[in-house]
Image 1 (spheres, one colour):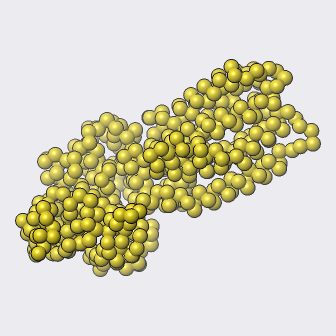
Image 2 (spheres, each protein chain N blue to C red):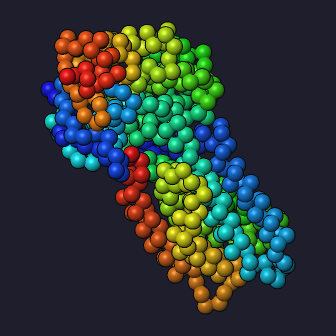
Image 3 (cartoon, helix red, strand yellow):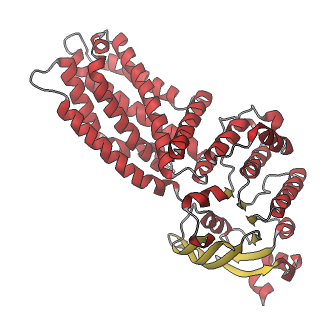
Length: 226
Length: 234
């Protein structure tokens, strides 16, 4: 019970930190808006090809904005070695990890909702809102995967002087299966591909989520130990 | 009862050796002051005692291995070189967060008392980032006393404190000692370190030059050790 209580304390502390410092979520939202505008200018998007391009654009934004925000939440822990107040407390490394995963998950969900809404407005693609219910499973599985492995890697990156620069190089190759699953299942839903279901991709994403979770649980304690 | 014990502890950072075979035993209710020049391995030793750092070789034993990892974490509080505070959270939020993790429901009155004692009550709703370095240090110390651990490990507790807060922290630590709790601290301030100690250890190049009862050492001898450890011991 105290395991979950500690994890929730850490999550609520992160929410409060974000509310005060506006360092993570605001950066994520700003980057996703910026990328949407760049894609709007850079790509020749019209009513015919929007549903083909939307999955790729959205998941690229989710991945890049997400890793930026997760990097910031981890940096906040390293400032003045604030994370040691958790490490030296009875809270276990696993509850620390879970608390950080939950707060990252929350920020990612907010960023993704914002991105999808602005995508629909900016590209005049209301159908994505209409298909939201069908998209939710792959969005959740993908976001959970991002958060599970992103929390580990973003903490890992804070141990190095050039960590924030290195983070995307470490993180992006590892989340390729999640990106692939997210893009493909969104493509199937938006383009109503005949004969193909999203089930196969969901299974792949579930498998990777479990793998990321198990690996991170094992490794996180070594990251916070000096 | 032995509360903390080190057996043959060595710590290496790549090619550099920070600790070279440390044996140490601390009885419940005793206090140990670790003195030594910069780079002698004091912080590494304290981090290993607190459990945040694993030794490269050797063993750390807490309560004769009869306490669980969770008990150890509940009963030991480490005040590091840095203050371990969240700059964007307020003074009260920082304190409450740590109390929640330690499952300490001290009540508002004791939080208010300790913050008043450290001159921080008026600033309780200010973000920690707006406090001076000295105030942050006071808050970090206050947090430790609020947790009221069985073993308080302090790395340079007086750094950044002016003379007024140094003396009130000194008397607060003395009160803590009177409760028969264990204290391990490192400091550059020989007089304060001496005053708080039951035992004094002098660390030089990762090895203890001595661990003695306070009565067996005098301050002059310790000061001499800082200048030239080998010569003084000859």
